[in-house]
Structures are given as structure tokens and as C-alpha cells.
Length: 102
Image (cartoon, rainbow, N blue to C red; front, side):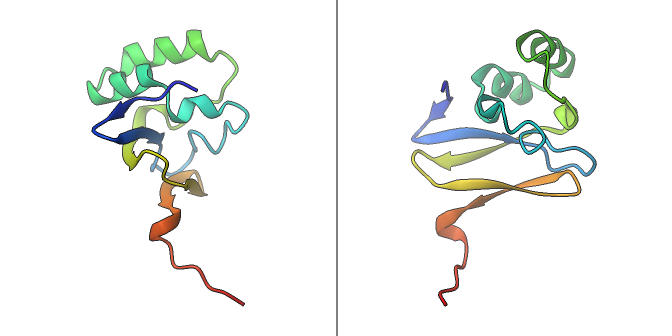
């Protein structure tokens, strides 16, 4: 899977806005979490170009949340998950979460 890495950190795309999840509503297409071209469009805030790219590259995905994408920069190799509530996604890093033991 192609990922954008800078200074030992990987770009992870997520949509924090309520109403539609980005990756959580497209779990069968995990590459949209990391697509370097999408990251570039988000960084440059080129939303129209981003919409065109996503429509052509991923024609069968649900693109809700596209206009609200944000980038989380995680250490290479960090274990994480995307948590979703009512369409609002957040990034949870395993080592930063408090785990209980039974």
C-alpha cells in the first residue's frame, strides 16, 4: 500500500465531521487512508481537484466526508484505529490508549 512518509511519520486521512465517515464507511478500500495524492490535495486545500481525483480513482466509494478530510501524522509502525461516532472519525493510537486488564 502506497503511503506518504515524512520525517519518520505516516500521513493518515480521516474525516472528523459528523454525518459521514471517510475510511469507516469504505472499509473495503483501506488504501484511501493513506493515498499520497489525496494527502497532497488536502494539504493544498484543492477540494475540487480532490473530488475529481477520487471520482476517477475510486469510483465505487462513498465520498461523504471528503470535504472535511484531515491528516494525522503517526510514527511509522504505530498501531492505530479509526474510531467513528455518527460519522465523525478520530484517530486512536494504541500506545496512547489506556487499556484495562481483567
